[in-house]
Length: 560
Image (cartoon, rainbow, N blue to C red; front, side, top):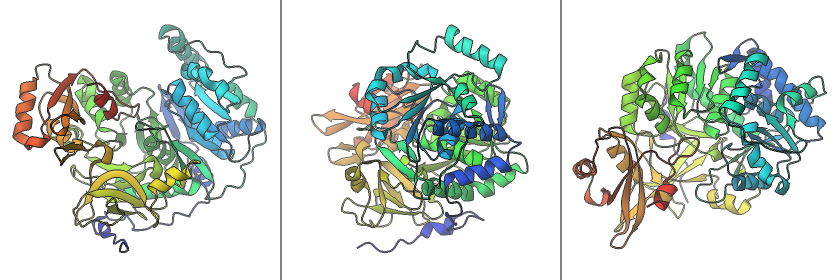
């Protein structure tokens, strides 16, 4: 029997951050959104390709879209998929779906037909909103899915007649980004909004325990599962994040806060922190549809002057590696969030030196809505930890027998709090594997806690490399190698080895073309004990990554 959780991290909280907050202040997520649309009607909600969209516009268009969805006969609890990158139609569609009492199913636009078919079937989605660039993917599988209603958006839909027409022409005809497709009975996004304008729209009675979002896990290690996020889960996490960052955002003053949405909004990190939190606090959110276009991204940033920059390690590194990085005004930046993957100390130190704003690394998962643990935004420098559990959250470190481990010992990070999902969609067997009898979610991540309540990720259990009985944690090796001049990115995986069972394989993307394997090995010998040193060193021109920017270790293992 484990002892009651002692929240020793509370002594390390920043001023003004409460141990607990009332997470039941709103009956559902829609009530929270409605309040913001009314309060911030005149403010800019989104900036996209130089076009500004107000909260009043998001309000009216999402109401119309909700009316359209209800006119199709969709009823409370029905699932609607959204398969779009960061375009302003995304928040309109999301708010419309929620206001109609429907369940949002976030879909990665870069899915293959096989992956899309699985998610649409598994969720039981009856409708989908999709950008035309990806319509051919849906065409290949729609007949095998429950989807009956299709709304097709175009890149320029909300940019006005002249600019929108020009953007659509360039995307379709110059850049050839829209393969020909045939989706019987589909409706254009603007036509759907027009059709819903003036139609009766009534948000059904939504309870806190009603499902709001199905957020599918990455599926990089198996079949993708839908984390069932209830209205109360998302409301709680928004209030938790608001309490956590509130003192830091006070530095912005009375001006509207400007946040950068370069991470995809369909991913839980950006969904909560950019789309939902942005609306909660009336922020101006800069939408970046293609963050891999670093020159284009920096061009947008030059005129935006951001206050909040959520990103993953690879994006921070990529921005700083570009010669135009110094043309951006970072003087108003008060929060740099790091999440999604481990932030490397070398990258964090360069970012702090370049911008004056430290990266506050945090931690969460689709299953936790996602924010569970975070460094304080006022931390003066990179801590190398994921920080402290946020308000109303308990975190423990346990062994494989579900027993708490001693302070400082590694074990599985387990989380209990109002932001933890209800379970995996229609998968009680999978839910049972990750939920403990006393209500903790087993994350699958190995971590340790120190005497001040700070948590540190050691690694994913499945990513750990076992060399002759010794545990090698890839994050540790990567953090060391990232400090070597000439390294842009690096990743470590385990590969089979006849003598030691597994061996360490190190993959590097060079910043300096002159970097040699001999230099890498010499640096590793100087900084890593023998069994942690790479047996295989491989150079690549780029890393395989998810659309969020996580390095796909599986592919590095597969391609030896």
